[in-house]
Amino acid sequence: MSFEIEKSYAWDAICEALTINERWRTRFLYERKKVVICGFLNLWQNPKPCQEILVGNKEYHIRAANKFIEQNNCIPIFLKLRKQDQEWQFLGYFRPKGQPITDPVLLRDQKKQNALKYELSMILNLEQVDKAN
Image (cartoon, rainbow, N blue to C red; front, side, top):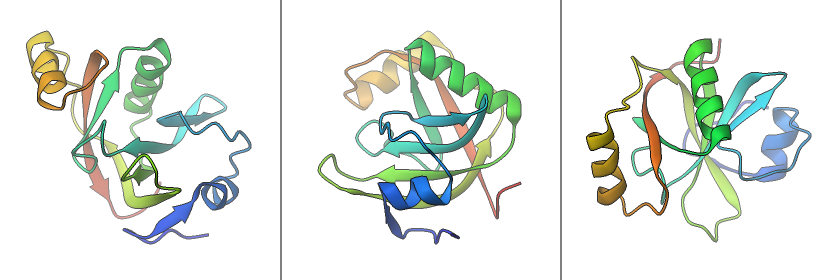
């Protein structure tokens, strides 16, 4: 399946197209065999999803974000607009851009500005690319 930018897809259709066996919807950067293959963001925690990812401070989030940075390849990213939505909008293919922002003052400001309930470990800047590597 080829995804169209701004088109919405059911979770099961995405999983089938990307051969994701696990149906765990809470992973923000999905890994297969220790490689990040796609991203699932939501608008209420990532208000600028085509520009950056606000990375929480849970060990899994930090590990997956660092892996994505190290890989430096592009992945498809999907966005859930509202909590009650059943579908995910395809945003396009993205890769990390530059070094992550880890300045505690900037992270605190982002948390406050976006009314986040969790602490941030970093902000990953993104660059959109034409297609997957």
